Structure formats: C-alpha cells, structure tokens
Amino acid sequence: MQFPLEADDIAQAIDRLAAQIRDRHPVTETLALIGIRSRGDEVAERLCNVLAEDDREILFGTLDISLYRDDFGHMHENPKLQGSDIDFPLEDTTVILVDDVLFTGRTIRAALDALSDYGRPGKVELAVLIDRGHREMPIQADFVGISLATERLDHVLVSLEGTDNEDKVEMIPHA
Image (cartoon, rainbow, N blue to C red; front, side, top):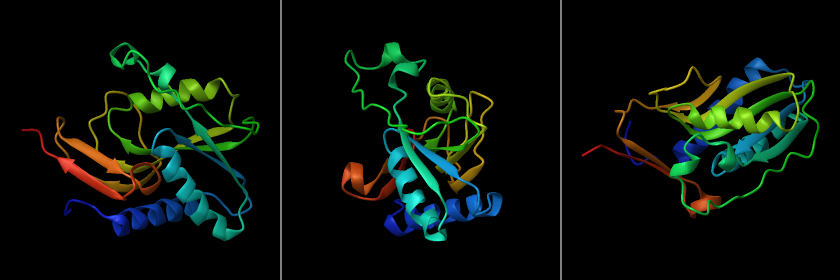
C-alpha cells in the first residue's frame, strides 16, 4: 500500500464498509451507527450518508469515551470532553460502533462500557476505517475498510476533512 492514502482511498474504504454492511443487513432492518469521538464520528457520518442512499432507516449517534479509558491517568490533566449524543433507545437495536483505527482494542472496550450507560442494544457490531492489528484485547472488527500491516510501534495517523481540513492517512515507521 502506497502512503500517504488520500481522499479517494478513504472514500473507497467507506464504500467497502457500506457494501459489507449491506451484505449482512437487509434494507428493512433499522441500524444505529454510533461514531466514537473523535474521527470515528466523522467516519460514521460518511457511512450513514452512503447507506442512506438505500432508503434505509439509520439512526446516528456519537460517543465520547474519554472518561471510560483505562489510560485516563496518562491523559492530559484536563481532557477535552466532547460529549455523547445518542437520542434514541438502544434496546433491541442493532448498533454498529464506528471508529477510524482499530489497534489494541482498548478504545473499543471503553466504548462498550460507555455504550452500556445508554441501554442494552440487541446486538453490537464494529466497523473501522483501518484495522492495523496488534490487539491487546479479544476484539475484532466485523467490517473493515482498509487492513494495514504495521509494526507494533509504528504510528498510523488519520486526518479527516471535518476534523483536520484534509483527508489523509499516514504511516510513520518506528525509528
């Protein structure tokens, strides 16, 4: 894979995610896409826009996991809380959590903890723009836009238009 990945690569990854979701979920099924802040929410919004072309009912929400992270003590003294926005019931709903990069699995564990404060979904699945491997927890994505082979200490940096004013993915090898 050639780096950096650009806007077209990201758009194709979103289309791949949408195709995978369409294959697993009929148009008649209501889905709730919940994006993990920050950047997972933008990926989720883009994914919602693509899936909405099917005349499918899609609920959209955002989830701030800042207070649920197990590395909270290592964060800055005053973490930037962005707030969650889930204004629909989760009971008996198929929720697809959406994030930009899946790495160790710890972010997803925190997201599952945070999500449980909003109710008990019928089912939870995971969609990620990029899966780079190196899990520390038994978590895997149900839907993957791009799989990257990385070394454990490499850095994968995702920039998205709404957050960073450009669409780009860079991999910075560990020195």
